[in-house]
Length: 348
Ligand SMILES: O=P(O)(O)OC[C@H]1O[C@](O)(COP(=O)(O)O)[C@@H](O)[C@@H]1O
Ligand SMILES: [Mg+2]
Ligand SMILES: [Mg+2]
View 1 (cartoon, helix red, strand yellow):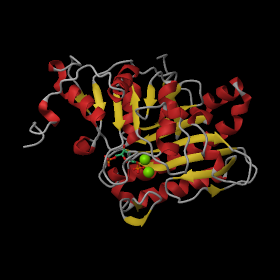
View 2 (spheres, protein in one colour):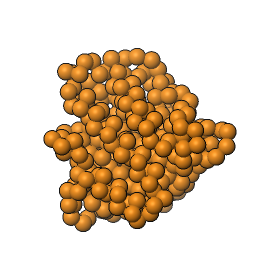
View 3 (cartoon, rainbow, N blue to C red):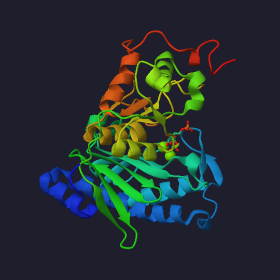
View 4 (tube, protein in one colour):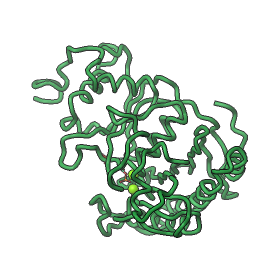
């Protein structure tokens, strides 16, 4: 990682456009999203003083109950995108694609508020976005039904102890931290490089009985630590906000898994391809990491509908490659411990 220099997000976007003039519209869109993120950050930072941000409302596209902050964030980001060179938006909080400026060059997929279960309890939440070129024609969905490799930029915001704006325009991944006094995002982590191997994994372990065999075996072998085939001890972290887990992996490595499982509706996991897994995959790859659905590179997946889900495994390359080995039967040990067996530690 090269030394951060405290320069602003605006300076960085100017430099990216100087490098590649075709990124001008993408940069303008990122500026609009960053301005909205500062406003949302202020609301999140007021906590309960901003009212009941967890108050429940309608159901969203995925059947989740919308909370007040989901709606506030969706409205503020939509307002920002109306001022940007954006023709279409696919938002988690809107059933259908929203058409904005006819003839504009870009389409944006956005999760306005990621980590909704953390709203109202003072825990980390965020925003995720991916920007693509518009596919000309009459079908407003078409721009989104392209591989993740068509993204011109992706990013996420973490509304945590600090507010950070993590972004790539295909030239490395950088973290900018909000200078609250000046309302400016400043570069704090330049050209991130995820370590190839680390001893942390992130998974919602309460779903263990629903996982498929490869995921069970992978986690079981992590739990066995120095007594298992991985021959080292692991630590577990789960923040219930993809953005926070992704930021941790970017900074200190490790692996994140949200696999498909056998709960009703979870065959493709929980996370959505367009506004969660594809943007995260772009950012992770640009930082030297890897992102897969267990079988295929996330960046090559093509959605067939805008709220499509996909399993997600990302992080340090050696750890992601290790998970892939469990999927294709090359795992380090065939004899498993009884942890997940018929009469193991997790069953009586
Ligand atoms: O409820 P679980 O299984 O812990 O899932 C948590 C995951 O779901 C998400 O909250 C889904 O995102 P939304 O909150 O935007 O629906 C991720 O941020 C997080 O990784
Ligand atoms: Mg989300
Ligand atoms: Mg959300």
